[in-house]
Image (cartoon, rainbow, N blue to C red; front, side, top):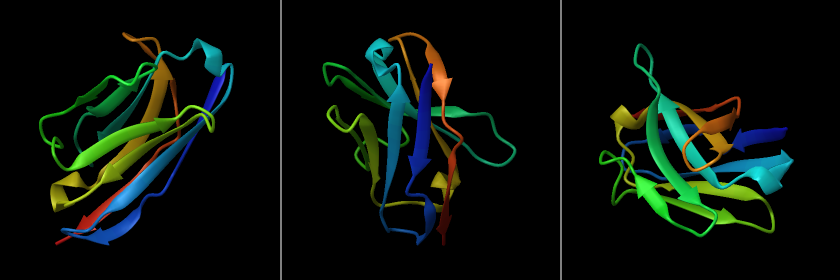
Length: 116
């Protein structure tokens, strides 16, 4: 089993920045990929960004050029640096971990609110 704990959410004005963290514990040797997703009120959860064990990153078109995903393998932590935030980025952000194709584990989520 893998446990994921997100942190770093909060309230920020449009144009501001936040950095989310996701700390993994447990059987982390089984993890090949970690990702961030988000769910806004009344909307389905959507993919935001992912990073593999070899550092390959993927981004949703809506965040390209503004968000950066990175990882610290020693700390078993994945980060999401979010710059130039927009009100439409407001959502609960979830961390996931698993194989390259399946998100086996999920965190509890952290709220990000961007005011206009």
